[in-house]
Length: 354
Image 1 (cartoon, rainbow, N blue to C red):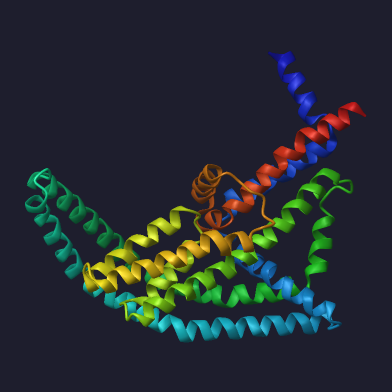
Image 2 (cartoon, rainbow, N blue to C red; image 1 turned 180 degrees about the horizontal axis):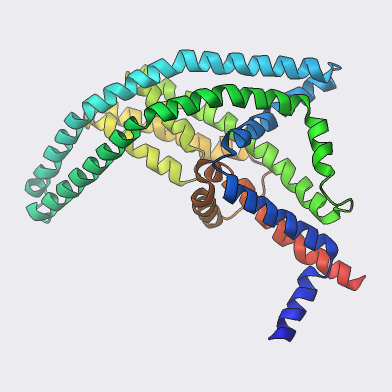
């Protein structure tokens, strides 16, 4: 057993570069698993700074000094957030309140439709429908209790949100302004010879940058493209549903299916099985089709192709570990794992040959 372990160790960890990479990966995972909740505003600021850095770099290439570029991009970012918040949030909040008020009526109508199924389809018994209705009622009651518990802690959540609204923008500005100094400071704690780690980071850095920027663009485009047909047809809760559809692209495959359920149900309760309902579903399906077959390949062409099953597993694993951030970065983290696996044996074999 000892010989087997020794042979495995010599094969995979004989190169010091591999050990450095392994230590960095373990340290990265330990920090996020241990301090992930505390570092939420820092992670958010890093992600946003990462996205804004592309615009800063483009301005610098035009000959504009970095400080002016940072201030320009930062101010435009704040203005965009303020316009989005002041313009969309009141509408979305009002629609959410209206939906909560109308939810009992929708549930009642849905139960009536279920109770009529045994008459239309004799294979379905009334007992089965009663069980389904009971299950739905139980789930609704549990959701109501969760909403109540959330409302009781809303004061703390609002205070935390206010703190984040101040802290995150400040961190974003400092990260953009002092990017070079921060990176040089971090390098002081790292080994001088980081060939393998640098290679892995260089490969992943390009893909993560493209993914984050592309994902934000996809959220905005899909949300706006969904809002247009919903608003034109006068569908209830158009802004709220469009926001949910836009955010659903964060979760590959599963998000699109999950968010389609409320869209279809609300459209059905508003129009019934009519021409408007069919038209809405066709328009919504076209948006989803264009997103999956044109927008996603266009935005993420440089991201490594990963099997859909691997993506779903990555969403489940990293989402369970780091919540929303884990879901958002599931594909980049899966890409990191793939890059490490592909790079690891090549380097060790070369080092052993040398």
